[in-house]
Image 1: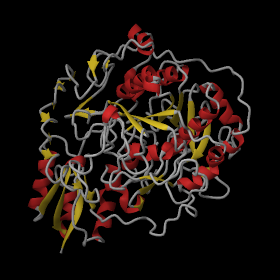
Image 2 (image 1 turned 45 degrees about the vertical axis):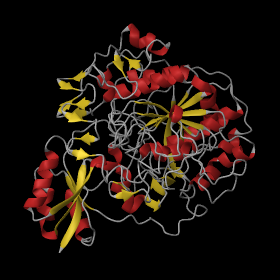
Image 3 (image 1 turned 135 degrees about the horizontal axis):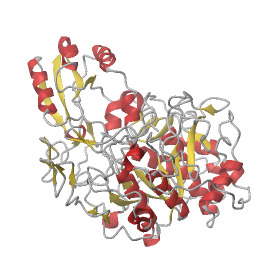
Image 4 (image 1 turned 90 degrees about the vertical axis):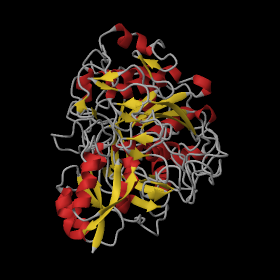
Length: 609
């Protein structure tokens, strides 16, 4: 009998989102927590009726090696999955163990149809639903008082977002620059191919098209996030595996600071649902410094504490959350009574602990159909065709960012320091974890605190490479290391252009940053240790003309009715999906995406920061 499995070619490690003490700013968390090859093999043995294999991202010739291994095992390659750099294949069940060890194959997992985690999902009874999260945190009390986040912009520096229902109301999402490795591909610009950013966006400010403004309180039918009338400004920095570099995140924060008031955007909050395991002192760390500069410019910065739990080896807060001058957010598990600090939430190292905790366990938010997370964890994380479940301090940070938008609407002149103090002093004590758990119900009637003494600031003069911590993006086997940015250009942390000019409006000029051009789709004039990255090529793998490393982005994969192995409900990337919908000014206006959506923490059992 033949069965189908997901085959994953090896890839270089890069910055990720989440991992237990992730340095790769976003994604490793979910991947790292998956069982190793043999465990996946055992799971596959029980799913011989599945019909396809997913090959996840190959580097160099690894994709060809993996395909050759399938054919040698008597199997057939069925179709390319460009978004995840893989393919589906049908192979004899007996050949699976050998395939998992074959050259070019990193992992093998079954391709399963998506089955919602709970077919009888009910927002009123599921403690991880946004309905219950907004009720438990007191957000619904803010809505009842007339505060819904209207007029407040929240910058989501993440993996991008996709226009699923919940994020498509007029003016809901505005795209800032795409600083990710996918920015050169017009088909991927701004879009969340990983799935993390969309989940965060839903928690912060999602609002279903059917939800009625002014009637959010007790609406248990429609999806409604923490600050349903706030505006999201998406700055994409990571690709379909969450890979990014610290220099890209710093550039994103720089852009937010310098453009926070453009066109009336009023960006008052930055959401950083990730971090690195960089351990140099925050007083010199460049990423911490960047976060502080946003804070000093009047932008409240919420950063994920990390998913290292209480183990002394992993419990230290991530960079930049370890900087006491911003808001470090831990996760609470509110699905149990009484609520507790989630077991995965980093507790700190004695010198620095989370400033507050917010719901972050089993959170149900928007689903990104066909994204890496959706394809990899849907068998356990999918709740409905439009919702997905996840846990982590990533989710808790998104809850906090939405809460901050509500309080800022109530108190337009509140400073980040005052907002931090207000939320801390009104928190509900919980397991002696910092001040306690977020309580907007108490904050609603509390006075705004006065100014308070602040810890020593960061100079930003430390090492960029130390800020990366233990992981670095890898291009064709070459890791990005040293004091240079993602373009390979020298990054002088102690120089005047960094500690001075960067934050006074002198660096961002039509997309120019540190001597490189970010505007449009150009990454011109750059090299990375001998690996060219100029124009539309990335060391010989073209990004133009819909091609990438031999895997096509056109045809049935992108311009037909499917996205990898998941369909957009019969819609297409070209034609009905985009016709009639506008992206003018980088703003979605009233368009829908076939009603498909999704969610995030342990994309089932994996963790994010």
